[in-house]
Length: 366
Ligand SMILES: [Fe+2]
Image 1 (cartoon, rainbow, N blue to C red):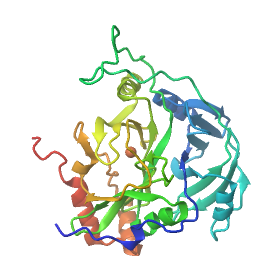
Image 2: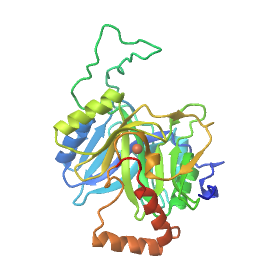
Image 3: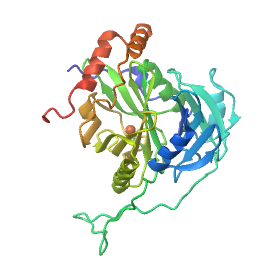
Image 4: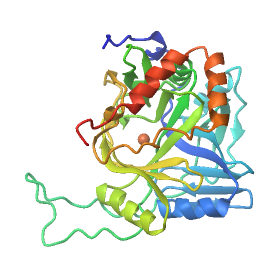
């Protein structure tokens, strides 16, 4: 293993355009909104608005929607929205050459937004001044009897047999052709801080977990993750739920409804979340998580090797199809074209990426 090579593209921004505060919502196009409404309801979101051409789902906490689906003939991930502090942040973003002006946000809770595109072509909106659309009553986390604190006396653990309680969207993970260029765009435009950078076995970086810079106020270990891939693609989006029981009972409920499980329950390494992944009706991954790390701006960037073992500390083995697309002839042709035109990818680099993903995560398991 060579030394990890620090790359100036991934250095913290000294003067970012703005400092994003959180993930606001994710945006999809889907042919069947009824199907999406059923799945997302069983996943634990609540319907905030439904029309013939749009489905807006929300969590129990956080201003504004969590998940927006527009009706379209072909299923497609469009992008996501980041929340910024105020109108002056929107002014700064609207002054960028590729940005839209400041426009009203036509979604429940209103507000304002500026539309941008990241270098991978995803729609990235900055939103502000949303009015809260939900502060639902939620159950308290299950009290635990630990060796130190005995918090549950004369009572059992009986989480309700219901969907998980989605509180808010937590993060969105992208695969991109031009990794350094795209990660740098998020760092410089939205002030995101690399919490962790992961490297291939030649010492070059290929993935970064980015968190919001809220100064002394802690933020999720990652809000956006950018990783190198052979196509510009959505990996997954993740939604915070109450606790381990909520993650696990959420799994029971989704299984009872016949939805497709992807991976879990386990605990991640970088970010430490207890996770459980599901496939939406169009095969895209969505994640329930609880108990993730919270870092303020003082925590320095971590550096580690990229491999499947680094995805989790405990849990079932990573399924073979978790990060791998179906290798159809059309897909392979597209990949070859992408590698040829990419400034950052080469066939040798793709081989290293594949080796990192393919390495057994638990080599001692037979
Ligand atoms: Fe995740």
